[in-house]
Image 1 (cartoon, rainbow, N blue to C red):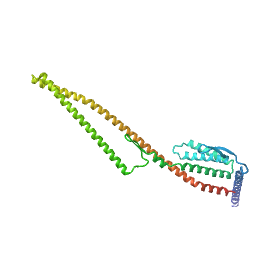
Image 2 (cartoon, rainbow, N blue to C red):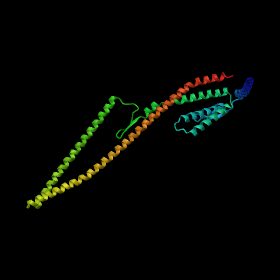
Image 3 (tube, one colour):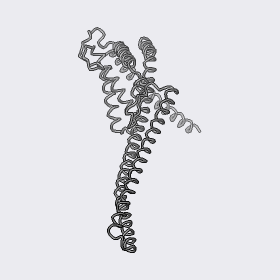
Image 4 (tube, one colour):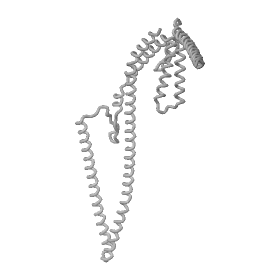
Length: 320
């Protein structure tokens, strides 16, 4: 019994020693980590505090070149790489290799900026870049009026009237007046065509009657003494005239067929062209909607940027 208690005491003592050694090692590691983090924080807080800012040439959004501080330039590049990463991640066709490359570039730019400048300098650079981006965005969006542009380029096309501006839609009275004028013009043109065809028919009928009378006189003068031969000659002449009429009608029908075929082909071509224009208009409307949504989203983000920068400034200022 005493021997069992002794073994139990020895095991408990060994376990306590192991736990004590593990706790001491863990405490030593945490103390080392704390000292390293404190040294890094102090190094970041005191980086370039007393150094003057250097200026570099930086290209603006419109291509103009100006002077900018080195910190602002590095922060701007880091923000641009972060934006490229976000756009690449939102694209459905983005590949994993391309996404990893954008991510690596963004991390490198952020680390290079953080490794050189202090948090206050980075905050000032972020604030300055935000104000510059907001001013550039306001300048760009103030000149955009997509609805007005879409109205200004609205038009219709007809073979007779050509291009017709639809930016200012006509009134109902003007539309009815135009339709009545078009209908009257078409009715008058049809009446003139009908009268012209009737005149041609009367002239041809008169010439046909005169020609048949001349042929009958000629036949009577030549073979008037033989009635049977005269009837046969008249029948032969009528048959030849009917055959000639049929042969004359055939080319006219062929020409009419060619003209109708050309009109059908032209109508199909016009229909395809109108369908293509309609599809382009629909694509343009969809593009306008997407651009308008993007502009609205950018305007909202731009409006909330000063508040976010102010909160970040307060958080950084609260650091020990």
